Amino acid sequence: MNSIIKQPSAWVPVALSFAVFAAMLIYIGIAGIPVRETDEGTGAHLFQIWLVLEVLMVAFFALKWLPKMPKSALLVLMLQIAALSLPMSIVFSLKL
Image 1: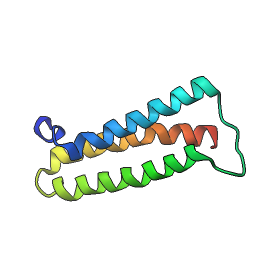
Image 2 (image 1 turned 180 degrees about the vertical axis):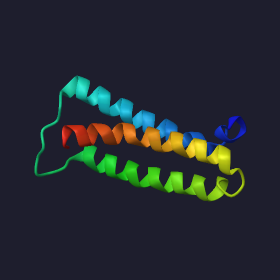
Image 3 (image 1 turned 120 degrees about the horizontal axis):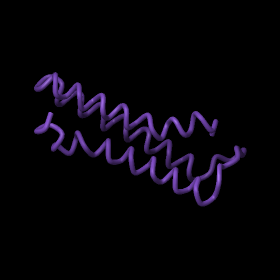
Image 4 (image 1 turned 90 degrees about the vertical axis):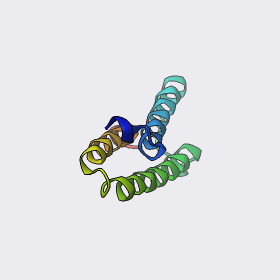
């Protein structure tokens, strides 16, 4: 797993998930818990764009590395999915 995690297709999705998670926590810390409005706003659109990009990056990683190094790639894939669930857990728990 050490050599495969150094590949950008492995660590970029994890780093991006942590960055989105941190941005959400900072926003909630500064502005408070957002209330649901009819217009979704910029934050919701950015979240949707991030989600699409994240799925594409994880799919690219899976298609590229699972055939070459299945065991290591599966471990990194589980890490990517766990990191993906962090920002999504905020959205689901706050019902945004």
